[in-house]
Image (cartoon, rainbow, N blue to C red; front, side, top):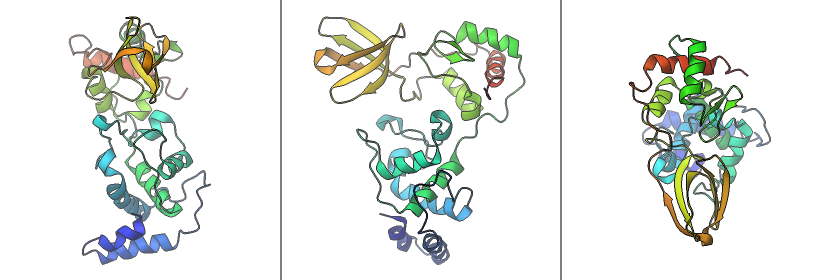
Length: 270
């Protein structure tokens, strides 16, 4: 169903139908080759994009666009910051789908696609806007003590967990705090914990990096990239607990966490 098909089903809302139809009529020449969204910030486009999203996308990505973890549908409020995507890349992904995933292609007009992109830009997470003051030097030390084995920032640290460069520009304070205190509630794609046992009896645990019908790649606990053919495995177990341990306020106080975030933010523009 395209937006043009959806418009007649807007109950008792003649003005909304008129606005959306008018917007479509005046935008039929917009091309997917645009590198800048021509409808960015357009309130009518955002409204129309929201209607399209609820009709086409909410089943998998949730009514709030924050994703549904049980079917590995990503949080679309984070796509701009977490993946550093351009608007044209988001446009193409919606249009063409993602091969090998549950994300299908969508037969929408270019105008409708740009309206969806406008909506996603409007609901995007803006990052930390209310970070309490903290000590950058103390934060650097707390980061080295608590985080650097797995996480990288300012050119130092491990790669087992997400890179934390610019984390404060792409995640809200509430979201970051929740990830530290309860890391298993939402585990991002590329960091899903798995355990495999090979045909030779070797047990390997780590995070899943990629997978298809025949093989998988994972980063093991020694941060080595390993590849396996599924026919060579005795078992493949998808674990529910994140490889990141939960940090209680006793283990890492709020003030220490604020120090760390101020340290990370000090290099956010790098």
